[in-house]
Length: 446
Image (cartoon, rainbow, N blue to C red; front, top):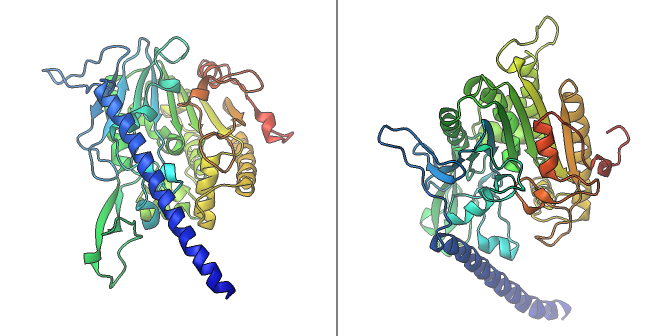
């Protein structure tokens, strides 16, 4: 009798929750469509940068442009473009955009949509560069035009991201969607394919990034200062590409700063994912031998910089005397203490639970402490600094702290120590390197 009573009350509850979820999905989709439509109708979409008759590119200073990359492709197979702005100084920002990550068929089948975000359903990565994504890429934070942004007069190339592979993949992943629109986790052997629509996620990040870097080097070949930065997924790409940026694309630049903002998702399986799922270059998957992928790739970069192949003996090797070895180099990292979004990914990839709570946030906090300690040791021979904040998460239920700052309104928000990220970052690229908010990690040896 008790079970029957439960079933009577439980089934309508499911219907109510499902209806609520569908309404939220619909509302979220409408909001995204309205924002995208507003951008297009108001003429706010960045104009396309087209070649002149002689094939050259002549961007107007201070104007953001979209630049289509013919050899590029977004995750869902649609077109790929980057954003370019010519500054008023001979200084350049290469910015690797964030936008989630996919590591198996289940996550591949759940790209970000306005509906999924509004309903709180699992959504893992952006799969295309629809007009709505412009608001995440330019005209905000470090990409804002205006006197309050100290980088406003720098040139920019924003390497956009919609492939779910941390900018390093060269592969594809098939997943399925059933006729009723429900996402699947791949077509299983022996399953009736007529009941499912098979789709493909193109892990094309490596080709996209290299095409973008080639364009950047042709437009801005000899900057006097170079900031290589990235937020979230883009922050992982900073150390992954730092060596080739300094040696291959900008070998004559004498002053380079590397900056990753909020790029920590602990996972014991990164090496397999990078090797087998994304088909990343050998050097990258081989270096991914620990749970902290950003740390591993910074270690790879630093060992190469010092003339040592990862895993080889330090004895008998001389410091490398290449283009990168002669540069002024700085390394920076930023994070909030209990990042709500990174802790959500951490929970999902570890426990298969899409969501965050105080327990997983505290686990993330301890992982961040260890990451900062390790980076401090790794970077001991070069100027380096950290920007740590505890700004509250105001975007989703579950508590925690904010995710990223460099392309967010809080880029201009002072922490309790008084410094803004804008000032801290600009000071750092000009040689005034100092920590902000490090006390929030509560370790006396930081």
